[in-house]
Image (cartoon, rainbow, N blue to C red):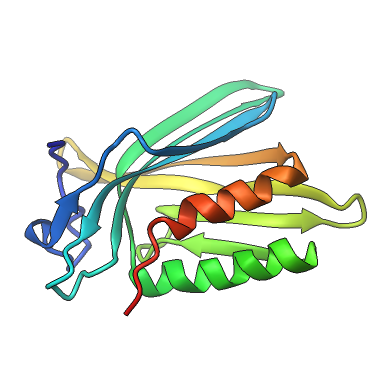
Length: 169
């Protein structure tokens, strides 16, 4: 079982989460960037955290000024936020217009969007991953933005991956 330090800003208790196979990763990439999301733990059915997810996010971007990357395992996504994202993602898959966004409760920790960019109609995953950490008694925040152009045929696979973690109440 993987051990992770819970985010001090979360009211979700570590004991309310069951381990999930950490090899199940959604990885989206193009020649300039990458976002990989891995579900590490899932809220236990018998707790208030039922269906909530703890995720690892790994991001890298290559731009004009070089390479920038970051990894955090302190992404907690509520079941209700995931369900709202899935509804928006299904609508995007059906209409091929608009977008769907998933955010983390703590500002700056996760912004993950899938959208159709106008007027080119390209499918894009973009957003940011951040972390708050303590260094020498000082709270610091690091953040990495990403933008990955996707083949439109991957939208169904993305929806299918997230649907595996949907919790039905």
